[in-house]
Length: 380
Image (cartoon, rainbow, N blue to C red; front, side):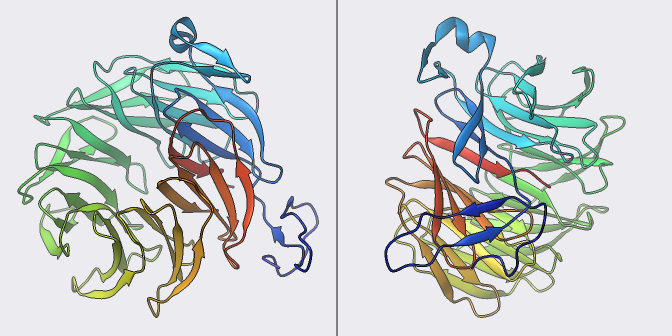
């Protein structure tokens, strides 16, 4: 059993019964997942049943695309899609220069966020869900009012493409990463640049805040990740990749550890205070495209070009489970909010739902007509 007890009112997700094998029951409050695909659509799923509840497309794609199997196919890619903190909305980012806000319950389009001049790289909500921030190849990030769809601030200052943008945990600031070798910290209320984090020698691909908002973590083409003090902009630690560059880096839930994924077939766990590598997670046969901590910080999930995901012990660095079944490279993997499920996204056009405790595949979410860029669970 993935769940230790049956709790009234919580939906159940069950695997198929096979001869000689027990029924797997996952007790979870997760009721929705969202995927973004190169086919130009996002889809909202019921991970309990594998059913697609809504296909999120746009008027622009509808004008150029065709409908197949109930889903809209067009020439533009959906780069990312995430739920709002209260799970009532979905925010999507696409290569057509727009972001869109959708109703999570009905799939209805609420706002189209116009203003960027080149493709979007990322989109995310503020912690209270009142604002959204988008990052674009037009060298800017933009802060939006979610209720009205109005652009409140254009964050101008980067000299090359902005690769990511996220809010701080308190929603007061925004952190951007850029191919201009820098990251920047901005005031969310005024749009003013507060700090420029300088020190990388090549493109900066990602930047995230620590859970308490006092630190930032960046990754770069220069084969390093760096830990920064947000208030002063000082670089505290430099983490060096073994071989090719890091693809991403994230903090552990308590902020004491960092986790890096790289073009090498390894992920690494680091101490934030010392920059010391605690574990190198070896076992994949190709690049690790993403790595994430479980909500309790005790395990790590990695997703690889080798078509597999792996679950690891943070304490020992041991591989606990290998999640096999996808037919092509994996792009991302994430835990559900309560940590009982794992969701993977693949170039094989599907997402899969897995039991985090046993590594068993519970559902395959099929229907996209191109590779998946991202997947996410409802936050509660």
